[in-house]
Image (cartoon, rainbow, N blue to C red; front, top):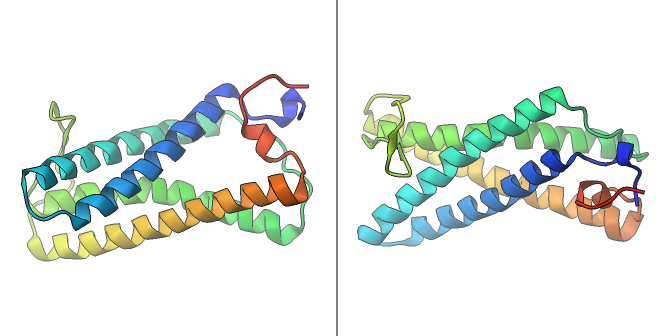
Length: 180
């Protein structure tokens, strides 16, 4: 078991877990919604997807604020290319956790639909109505979301590789529990 100084803090672990579950849920919901025929269910599901996206945007901002004030544990020894790849993937994950919901919000506004968080809190329009721009933003949102999904899969695969193949304790640093 890693030492306390080699582990992530409980708030960092909780934010990571919430973000992971939320992202997987929002991506799955986006795929599901895109296959639904136009119906009241589809309209409700689109709103649920928007609410999830705005919530994840807020959570990503909280995660970045936490990270800005709290250094992660020191990196484990690994080949330089792996450390560089990990750094690049983390940077892209953070960027896409912000970009994907902002593109979705912008797409919704450009299509002429407001974003009302949980049906209660109207959020400001980021853009005016522009149907041509909406189509472009829809495509960019989809590409960014698929890229995010692939990076999440790569991130998880790398963590599992470290746990099962390298057996270097990397995954244990993110697990809640007592430190040695």
